[in-house]
Length: 196
Image (cartoon, rainbow, N blue to C red; front, side, top):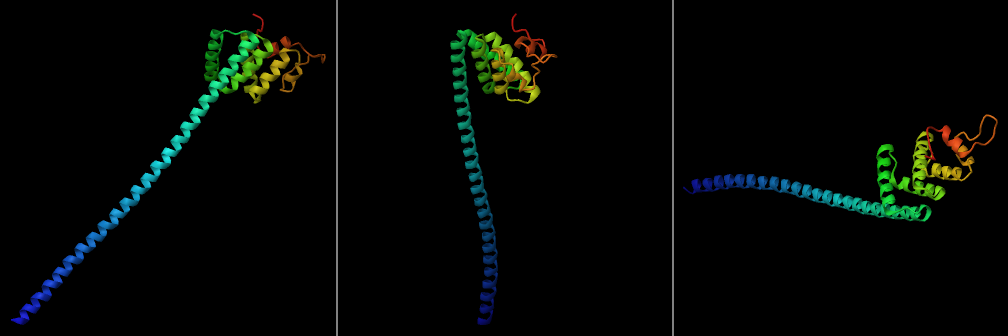
């Protein structure tokens, strides 16, 4: 009978060992899955952190752009008041005009404000400066030249130096080789009435 007890003990131990081995293997598999899940969680957290860093950087750039835009608008308003005696309502209307021109012609307000300020300084008149700025945007688009350079050339031409326009490719001499007046140079560029 002792033999039977030994066989039973051996069989019981073998079956128990087999069950414990299966439980151990299942636990190892679950641990591996949990480790993968932990790694995925870490990667997700790192991705979230990286996204937050990018978002914070974008927010900083947005704030900087808003500050620069406000400073540009203040410089333009000061120039308008000093050069043309512009009122608050004229300045506000000009800001609306700048926004409309930006949408219509794809010109950034940060490019248009300095160009317009330069033209107001040259003409002493907001309305005339807006007309010249419209022409400057057209010339800039047609020649690929910087709006600032074109508006500077138009400001110089407005004050008698039409040669600045010739460097932009605008015809400034008549058939006899004589330098044309500003009004004639601008007139050849299209239907542009500076003096309503």
